[in-house]
Image (cartoon, rainbow, N blue to C red; front, side, top):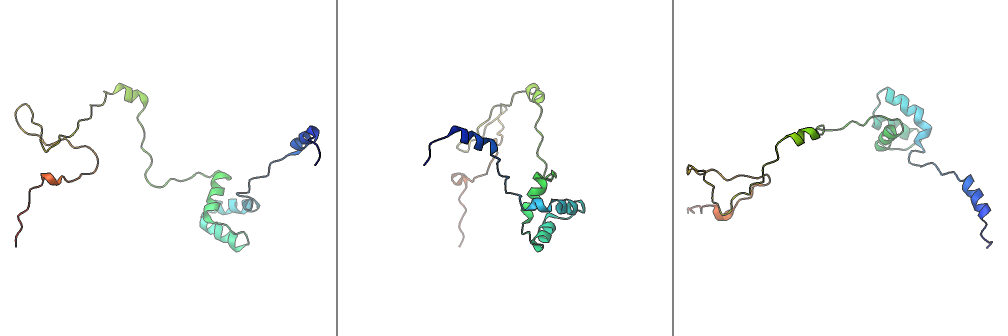
Amino acid sequence: MSAFNPIKIRQAVEEFTPRRPEKFHELFTAKDVIVELRQRRASYRSIAELLTRHCLPTSKTTVASFCHKILGEVKRTRGRPPREQPAESETLASEPAPPMVQPPTGGVTPADPNGVETPPIRTRGPRIAQVRMLKPQPQGT
């Protein structure tokens, strides 16, 4: 083994060129075809089937990723658009949130000053039956 030569290493570093990522390497040969088909409103599936029939096996997902990342097509979102968050000025100007009220335990309902019972305050989440609060059903024969 020869000794370390920093001059040869520097020369190798200067000549170094990184290899192109091979993710879409095969599809670059068909880029013009894909662009033309997309202009004619061809689906990703039909483009993938056409390329597969002509000796370039690929999937519709790969074609879609190629179109989004290389051709710059906009992704369409499915479903409902995301909810808009209120601006900071609106949240700062609004009143502070009321403190969380815990539901009463033991089945006791709170009473207002007039002595009228009010239903317990419900929190969000699943409603789980409290078996100890259920009245037994008469069993008929």
